[in-house]
Length: 391
Image 1 (cartoon, helix red, strand yellow):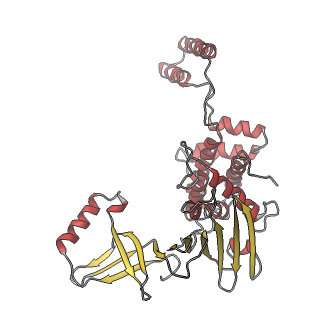
Image 2 (cartoon, helix red, strand yellow):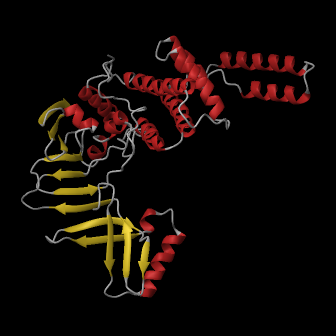
Image 3 (tube, rainbow, N blue to C red):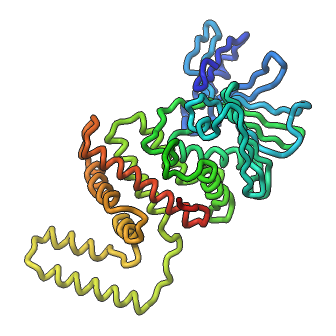
């Protein structure tokens, strides 16, 4: 463990079955998209504790010396010793310096904060000397094992605009704990896209904001009514924004415009309105009448064909992203400047128009408006679930 982001291994084989090794490596190459086609590494530490090191492919090896090197994402052990927690709960430990937004939100040198929600009491404990924040959540019907360790992290990924993964998590099952030590990605803090900013006088209280997002994530259900093991769509959008903090301004603009469009889709009703035969007949007649006008015009054949196809494929019940933004502008959810920024940047960058690679006053204002558009749509999406309280 050379750093928080580095977890690597090196070992020397006392003997090698070359036929089996070559067969395993060939199988992995032929099934490169199959995660479990990779090799699995296991080990025992100096205290005799067995660790599962996950699936891996060595990136360097020397068969003459029997040496293999590679990288890992996590280490997992099953602890049934006396030190294992006796209550069913999930624990996270974050490694933070004093400038980390989580440390700033906690304040002081050693503080504690409790949040009562989802049938549990979530406890935040900060130890400045140890440079860590510990989060403990007893399991409940709404915060079950396995799911909870993922759900507790997602609000941070949205609020901080970066992956914000814990260094350690433990799934305590009452006298037995499954403990995982993971890598912590070193990503530039995307303060320009982070939903929650330290020192912003207009920001919702940190723990209130956290509880609202956790409520959204934990109560989300798939089409079958089951809780989701995958990240919430909002979390995925903010993950992308955090990643492009290391990219170019053009990529930032592309991602912001696309994230806005994705959030708009989440805001649209999932169930179509009931069809009406009389209404359908009226709409069909309107289309046919307009098509006749187009075909009788003196425009070129190519232009008439394009216009005719557009009318035929037009749906009265569908709403474009631009339509949705205009509707939300009418409700004062988004501003005129945000709508204009999306119109200008989306239609230019999506069609290959580059923007300045350097800071430019006019473009910076548009990018800032796009960021605020993403935040406004996020607030509206959370508000419609009934869990968001506006400032």
